[in-house]
Amino acid sequence: MKVLFLKDVPGSGEAGDVKEVARGFGRNYLLPRGLAVEASPGAMKQAESRIRQEKERKEQEAKKLETLAGSVQGKELHFKARVGAEDKLFGSITASHIADELSKLVDATIEKKHVVMERPLRETGSHEVLVRFSGQAEATINVTIEPETDES
Image (cartoon, rainbow, N blue to C red; front, side):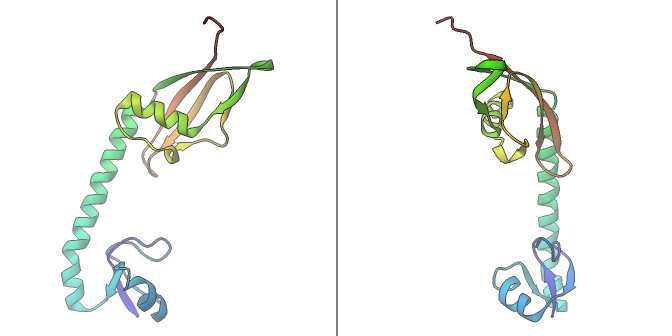
């Protein structure tokens, strides 16, 4: 079955692609969800404007993410945390903490899924953290964790 993809389907095709897919996949998954239409000359002509709008929307989104990555690049965040022996934290600084503070700093919504960390930060000092908005839009920030002082 030949279909015209209206939206991106990971592993199958991108918006605007015309591909041959299994009949069951097309009829049971792609067509009912509005991800593709059967490829006929009339359908292809109708879908051209929708596909063009989708591509323009993606380009605008990519530009917006690039701008956001530029505004985040090189920022420094400072956290104070209780520490125990050998400068180990009681608890940790997570991607969620970093995303919240970064959102306040740049006045834009940054989700914790954008903050790339292998594991939460559990030691004082300076740490470089990658913030990835998309494949091309990423930035590196510096996170400094300082021990809390008992000056209450």
